[in-house]
Image (cartoon, rainbow, N blue to C red):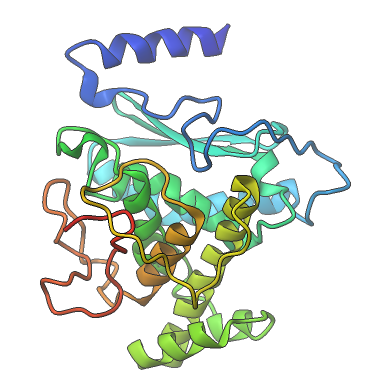
Length: 291
């Protein structure tokens, strides 16, 4: 009943003068972080990873700590729907008037390919729909939701970095099997060892999610060494292909703009690394973004 009422409200908002507040991503996960799918991973499923309810909540809390006051400063009220018991393998965001909601599902958190950092990056992605800036879905600054590629880019470039920059990232990546290409690129673009390690950590979180996207899409493997060579004729608001999304996570991790250098709802060049600024790294991939 609650879902039916909310769906009706979303429909009303999208067809009314309040369209800019519409529910772009419904609460059932459709049009969420992943393309629509029927996969379910229940609590206690033998195919799940080692994620626990306590860790699920702690990761969300870690992001909330930094972003609740930021959302408040922008006139919103951040709300987390912590659906640990829900087997849905997805995540979504919605906005109803001043409520900026993020819906996180236990099914996604329990997937065997999703690492703890990968799950944190999904939280950042969904928050990125609210805070990621331009380009927006539909290309209009009046729309509240940043498009899928921009939410991915914001995820590693701003959110993941802000949340984990004070941790001992060198110790964290020492326990990982890191792609040498990632280490090389991060070392080239950051001076401090912890910044290099944070860059690596963000990129590897993206690899976790890109592997999941490739598996669900039946697209084989994705690699840092095989970037998507396609070029869009106009910015794609929908989900890019798995390799393209990996490229976006990687480039976001390489962008050396400070996390306090804010993005903008209308100017897609502000607060990010761009070709126009002379950047040859850290820019949004052209497989989904048209400058």
